[in-house]
Image 1: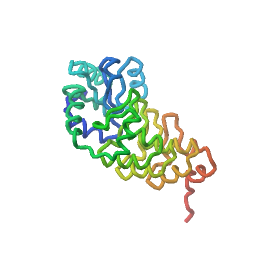
Image 2: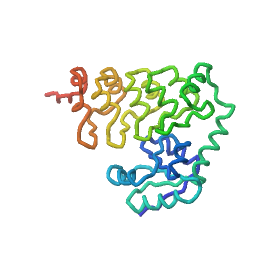
Image 3: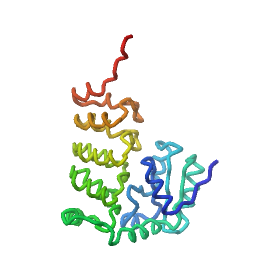
Image 4: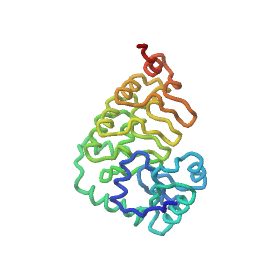
Length: 258
């Protein structure tokens, strides 16, 4: 069986480019609430049960702690449970937090309007990846409210388009929630995987279809989203279509008779 792999901050940044990567925080609940990696899930017995039931065995997993050695123990446990791509972050949370803060300090060029918005929303103007307790980053929030100008500015400033909330909600999903094609286009232009699925196998296209976001359905299809993809319950976006327009956009094409 493949052993877990220790990684450093640079390795972590590379892994975060893969939208499938899941991050597990094994620190105390108080430490987690005070700050954690974007999209990190707090490790609990309940989460472990969900992981065993729902997560693919080859999904990339990064485990981190406060440099106490706990992450290596949990990584070893996950490896023994059959997860084959488990990584433990050397140096723990500080290995990500401190270097990132140093890179951010004095480098970010933010407009006065964006800086004011970040402060008003409770985000860190020196660290765009600092998330709220539920994993919401500034970029995710901008997508959720459909503020395309802020989405573009945050991406230009280096915000990660692959951040996810603790329940696996992505920036593209939130752009669909806001019914904002321009927000979605900014993300897609940055290389966001339009077929990225959350832990239950649902994609942004499935959400858009089920929520009656017809113009988002059209945009995602034009961007290459797969209408035939199934979630864990075996449903496709076509099965979830809530409007007639979405139904016609998503219905399987009949093979042409020669």
